[in-house]
Every structure is written in structure tokens, then in C-alpha cells.
Image (cartoon, rainbow, N blue to C red; front, side):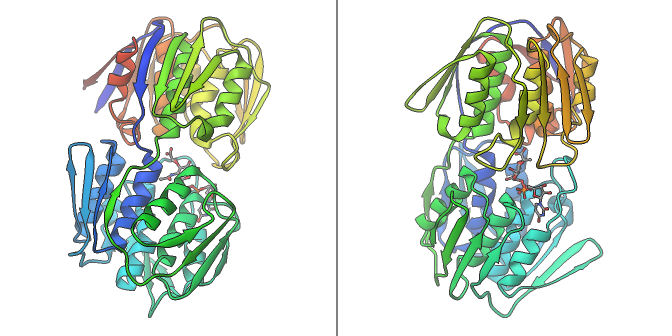
Length: 418
Ligand code: EPZ
């Protein structure tokens, strides 16, 4: 088990670079199973979700290896359509492989996926979409068993704009016979990134980023190199850290347009934010004021993956605020930990009612999931005194070199093994 020891109170100054987006790299890795061409993904974060996805690809018979910060995948020898349950349970994105594996083998066997414990996280939309393309699915003893004679393009209407379901159906449709139209598709930047990767290796997809995606089935894909978009959630996390601790921080290699909802909020809170090319600069030297209401929404609304970090900031703003989590049923598990640090937050169903306090007090807290864990680190950085954040393996799933990057801008944080 590992933990962070944090001595709070340092202002943050300097610049941090942003990793390639975790939530782009994961579906792109799944997409690599679709082609016998060699694929190289550039600037891949060394995070445990990616490492587990690489293990799954290896179990399928793909050759997937890190070369420095790049990841080389050769799926030409892929020979298995079964994803080991132990690995499937490790991460949500294991389910994205359904579309690719079915496309390649016309069969797939996978246990229900794992991932952050932030809600029920069903896969019904994934399965309904795959059935529309001709897949026969049975669910037995915790496994999803799929088979089909062939995949045939069709119209798929999603009940809600699910990111994973959109991506899974895109992957299954790439080499299907005919055209697939996905309506009420998710519009996250990572969906557009997946489309761009697939088109770069020979697919014919359009419309990603809008609510309607059209996939024209092709016979064959090639290989190639690809640089995914920067991680907008990592960028937002560092901006919130700077806002809470005070100072001036430049987040380099970030796309401001992908987190415009957060930038708008932080400006309302009183932060000074400027952009130049792919750098976002946040400056703050005072106690922030609260913004009354914030609701998480599918993109381009306020991202659920920044909810914990932003709630943590709101809890030390001047005034009251309400945060509503519309996407996941139980994404406030970090709040009892923040209360140990002095936060005045009451959670009722999907709403967090916040009365801002002056400052957090250092305490020992436990990370329960990826973004909630990152939020506790931010609280510790701005707190008075010493904090410990326990079970930081959750944070390692999505942030590479997290403490190193924070130390490089002045934070007093170390990782220790207990
Ligand atoms: C992706 O998860 C991201 N993960 C999540 O990021 C992110 O929070 C989420 O999208 C929303 O933006 C990856 O990309 C690997 P959804 P996903 O399907 O695909 C319901 C992080 O911290 N739903 O868009 O699982 C679901 O219950 C992670 O990086 C169904 O009802 O999210 C939820 O309420 C956490 N049936 C809503 O849709 C389904 O079949 C949105 O889920 C699928 C989803």
C-alpha cells in the first residue's frame, strides 16, 4: 500500500506538461485490435489503467510494448477472443474491447468490467447497440458471451449519450458491412480523438463531436503513428490545484476549449486565467468567492471527472454553493474524507450543499476512487499542517508522475510505501 505525505500551505509557481488523455488512449488501444497493421501511440501516460489494458491486449495475443513514452502494438498474431475476468474487473475500459474483438473474431467473452466505484455503471447501452449490428449476446455467471455470423451496419439510438457505448459501437461498426449511424452519441473530445485515430488507419467515420456519428464499413485497416489529445481532466486538476493553493501556474500542452466550462467557473470564482496557443495560465493570490450552482453534464457541460476537484475548491470559497452530480449515482464518496479536514458539506442524493470554510486542516484521509483521491490531494496541498492520503493506487490509475509534477511547481508532497 502506498500513501502521500503532504505539508500544506505552499503556493504553486511554474509550469506542468500534460499527458495524453487517459480516456483517449484506452479506447485507441482497444481499436488497435481491429488492424493487423503496426500501431504506435505517442506520449502514452504510464498509468495503471493503460498498463492493465496492455496486459489484456497481450492475453488476446497482441504484441504491445512501451518504448519510452510511446506504445507499439502489433495485433497481427491476435488469437484469443476471451478477456480474463481478473483483468476485466480492473478497469471500465475493458468493455470497450467488445466491439473490436467481435469485429475481429465474430465472438467475444468478457466478465463485467470494473472501474471506479462511482455508481452502478451498467453496460446495457453497449449491448443494445451491439445487438443492433447483429451480435447475439448471452449473459451468464458474470460473463458477457457474444457471437455473430457477421456485423451489419444499422441505425443505433442511444438512450443517453454514453461515452463508452458510443466508442464500443464505433469500434464494432468500423469493419461492419454497410453504414452505421449512431444517434444521441456522446460528444466528448475523446470520441473525436478516437474517430481521428481510426480514420488515420483507414476507417471512414464522420460526425464525432456532434450528436450523430456515421461509420461507413471498410474491409481493411492499416497501421500508423498517432498522438492523442492532451488530458483535459489532468489539466483541469492542476488548474484547480493552483486556484486553491494560490500562485501562478502554466499548464502546457492543454486545449482550453476542451475545459471551457471549468475555465468559466474558475473565472467566476475570481481566478485570473489567460491562454496562449496550447498553454493555460492561472493566477490567484486571494480567497476565492463561491459560485452558487454547478451541475455536471455530458460534454460540453461541466465534466463529471472534475466534480470532486471542483467541489473541493468550493468548500474553501467564501459563501455557499451547491454541486449536483447528474451522471453517476455515488460520486461523492470523498466528501466524508473532506469533512475530516474541516469541510462543511452535506450530501443529499445527487446534491452537495457547501458552506465555505476558511481553510482545510491537515488530516489522514483515504482515497476511494481516482478523481476523489486526486481531490483529497488538492485539499492537503492547500491545508494548514500535515496530511496523509492513503491508498493512492486509485490515483495511479489516471495520473502519471502526479507528485513529481506537483513538486516541480512547489508542492511539499512525497510518496511512501507502508
Ligand atoms: C467514461 O466512462 C469515462 N471513462 C469516465 O471517466 C467518465 O466519467 C464518463 O465516461 C463520463 O464522461 C473512460 O472513458 C475510460 P458513460 P463510461 O457510459 O463510458 C450510464 C475517469 O475518472 N450508462 O458515459 O463508463 C452510466 O451509468 C472516468 O477518467 C448506462 O446507463 O461513462 C452513467 O450514469 C470515471 N448504461 C452515464 O451513462 C450503459 O450501458 C454515463 O456513463 C453505459 C452507461
